[in-house]
Length: 322
Image (tube, rainbow, N blue to C red; front, top):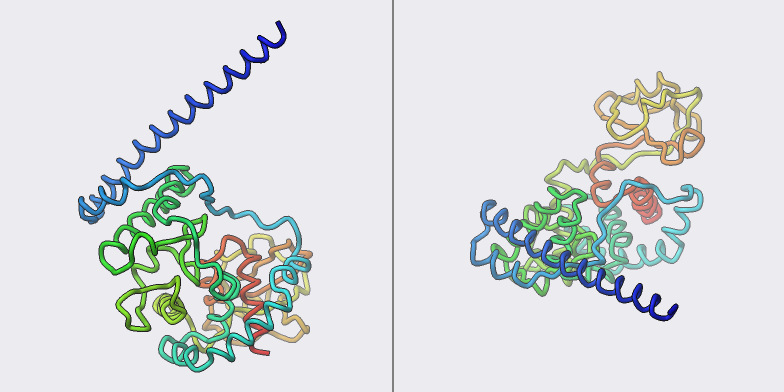
């Protein structure tokens, strides 16, 4: 009797899982038809949309980004995220590719150390340019519903990359979050800022370091990167700060931050200049590290989900120039 009950329960859950899987598959198929119509409405050729959407399968490993910080502190995170082997590798890779990186730096007015830091942190110096089918990842992320409009736009941009450039579907590989190539940029960014730096007819940010670096440098330059500035600095507070002052959305000048009681980390006064929009970030809260960050930091932050990850990039950039 007990065995029959157990078998009945097992059979019930087994059939339920099959039915749920079939329902999910039908639902995703219906969603792809919606994506197809939205792509066509956005300017993608109907034949292109039908051809590539027909090959898409739901990608269960697709992982949309979150705004949660790691459950640690910067004191522990930075040494783990940027160990000494990463610093030494970055310096060695810069020496190896110094002439071409310096040429790109002069062309696009982005300091080499930031390009090297992005390369090292985003793909381990080109070792992880993406290995999942990009169209399936982006469609699955849109289907999941978190940031749906964002991922629909990226999916459409990916189709346009195939249609308007020589990038093929097989080449269009991404991470589980949809980012692509050695610098891990999104399809819409690649569509707008991509550069065929090695002049082989393909904007190949997966296999060509020249294309990856030039595309990223061009994007930063076009977005307003300041070549004569840096990313920010660690500071200290001489008095209790209003929590409403924290965050990238709050901008003040150096003299204003000085009046609020913020000083250089060594206790000296801040620069007396009024021509920069400066924000105060406190990733670990007011008792942790404090940073004043500039427009360049905001541009770097678009590559990452958390302030921790962006600060890891800036930390590596500092270590490269030492």
